[in-house]
Image (cartoon, rainbow, N blue to C red):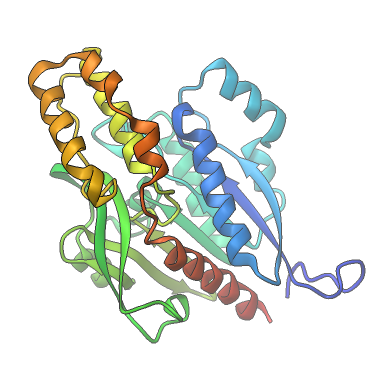
Length: 313
C-alpha cells in the first residue's frame, strides 16, 4: 500500500490526507475541528498524515489569514505530492452560479486533478455540486427554501461504505441548492444514503481504480452547528445586514427546547428586535442539544478509510 511504513511505525498503514478547507472565517476553525475529529475517530489502526490547504478567492479577515499563513500550505504544493485521500469542504455560496465564484477556477482545477491523481476524493456540499457540474454537466438547482435541519435517512446496505450502519439513520443538511438523485444515478453514481425529505446525502463512483465520494449532507456537524448557523443568520437579519428572513432548522435543539426556540424565532421575524435574539440562551441550549448522528458518522469515516487501505493492498 502506498505510504505503508515498515520501520518506525510498526507496520501500521499511513494514509496521507490533503484537507482543503474553503469555509468562510466564521466557520473555518469549527469546520477543521469537525472533519479532523471524524478522521481521528475513523482512522482506528491507521495513521493519518495530514496536510492543510485552502483555495484562493474566499474572503478572509486578518486573523484567519494569519492562521492560514502559519498552519496551511500553498495549494500549489499539493500538486507536487499527491496524497492518498483528498477532502475538499464546501464554501459559503455568494453568487447564484457556482461558476461565478471567485474561487471557481481553482476549485475546478483542484477536483479535476484529484480525480486523476488521488486514490479517493471526498467532496462536500458545494464541492460535490461542483464535481457534478465539471465531470458530468449536471447543474445544481436552487431550492424554493433552505433545507436545514436533522432529517431521517435511508441507508443502502451491502456496500463497503455502509457496513455497520443501521438501515435508517439521521443526518444534518444545510443548503440552498440540490442535485436530483435521478441525475446522479444517470451519471453512474451509487446513491448510498438518501432522504425522501432532504434528498441524497452520500453517493460514490469508481473510476479506473479511483474513488469519488460526494456528500451533500453534513455528517461532520457537531450538535450545535445548526443552531449556530441560525444564530448567525438571525443576527444578520436583526442588524439589517440582510432582508431575507432566517430559516429555523428542523430538530436543531432538544425536544424540550424546541417550542421556546420556535416562539423566539417568530418574535424575531415579527419585531426584528436585536434584544429578542440577545436574550435567548443559545449557549445553554446548545450544551444540551442531542447528537444522534455521531456514531453513524464515525462508522462511515471508518468504512471510508478502510476502503482506501484495502483498495491499495
